[in-house]
Image (cartoon, rainbow, N blue to C red):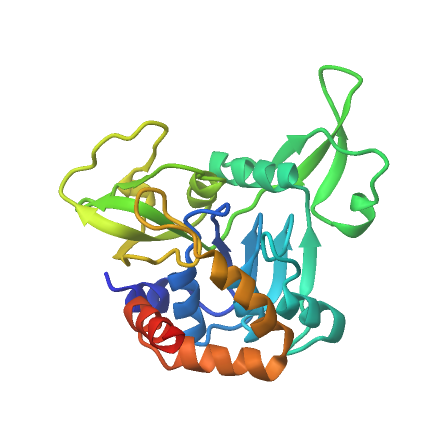
Length: 279
C-alpha cells in the first residue's frame, strides 16, 4: 500500500514505535510521513537514534525515548534531542537509557514471547536506580546474579529493506542490526522497500521476514536516505555533516522541516527539492 496510507492506518497517537536500522536501512521516509501526519505522544524505541529521531523529537512527536545510544554518527550530538532534554522544547522528553546488550535482549524477549531478557549486568552501574525496567535476579542454576530486562513489545515496528515479493515476504541483508527481532516483537510491522519483485533471489547472509509477520509493505525507493541500502543506495555523508548546523537553531530546524518534509508529499518530492536547492 502507499506509505501515507500505511502510516495513517497503523501508527496511532500514543503508540510505542520502533524504527530500527543500524547505520543502514534506516526508515527515514517513513519517519517523514509520521511528521507530515502530525502523530503525537509517541514512545520511540531504537538502539541508535540519529537524524530521523532528532527530527521526530524536534517537531514534538515524541513523549518518551527508549534507547541505548543517540547521536549524529561521525559528526556529534543530536541538538533537537539535547534541547528537548535540557530545555523541554518543543516539549519535555522522558528518557529510558539502556546498553546495546540490554536493548537487544529486550527485543529478543519480545520476539520470543517472553516477559524479559537476561544479560550480564554491570554491578558498579547505577542503571537500576535510573531504569525501572531492569532488575537483578538470582540464577536458579548457579550462584550468579544476572540482569533481567523487561521485554520490548512495540505497537508498531517500522523498517526499511531491500526487497519484498508480492506475497509480502521481506528480504534484507548487509548490516541488519536488530530489525528482525524488533519486527517479531511488534504487534504491527510496516516495511518500506527499495523494490517489490515477483520472486526473492537468495543473498548470502540475508534475513527474510515471512509475510505472516508483516502488516504492510510500501515500495519506497530511496526510503533510507541519507543512510544507505546495500546494493541499492550509498550513504549521503554530506547530509549528516550539514544536519549539525541545521539542527542547532530552532528557527532553522523548523524552516527545514517545513520546506523539505511538511511541504513535500513523499520521498520523490523530498529528493527533488533537496537536489534543486543544492544547485
